[in-house]
Length: 190
Image (tube, rainbow, N blue to C red; front, side, top):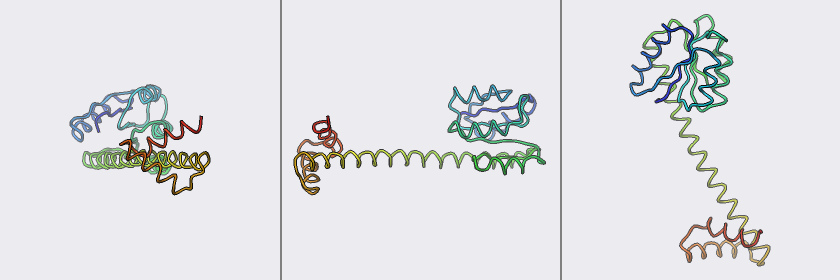
């Protein structure tokens, strides 16, 4: 993780968290927000890999902030809360994909938790990339099918003839069937 936002109202805890993050991710650039409001602004304007919320903040506890961060950005979210509140928060926030770490923090537990969050984020980004590829492929298929339908409708081709026409044009023009389909659609669906 490269860009991490630390939301903490306690300066001593903030310094400790920054040190732990630098140990866990030596190349990370950590930013600091002291309140929930500052955190919301920073998340809205910045592109963070992770937001670490040290509860409570001066203007709110932090659980609602964690929900907002996880639903309105691609950043992973980690909440650090007192051990007596951690289980309750974990139950509330697990549906949002928020990791809750109980206080007092141990270096080893923090390290393992943050590495898990990093691995989960990488997996999520991989799935998002695959999803975008599949959406693009689906759009290409839809476009090709629209072009086939136009050929069937306007030139009385059969489905096989329309398919063959698109393939042959793609070979002859040295382009993809998708590009040929777009030209056909422009020609017949004005």
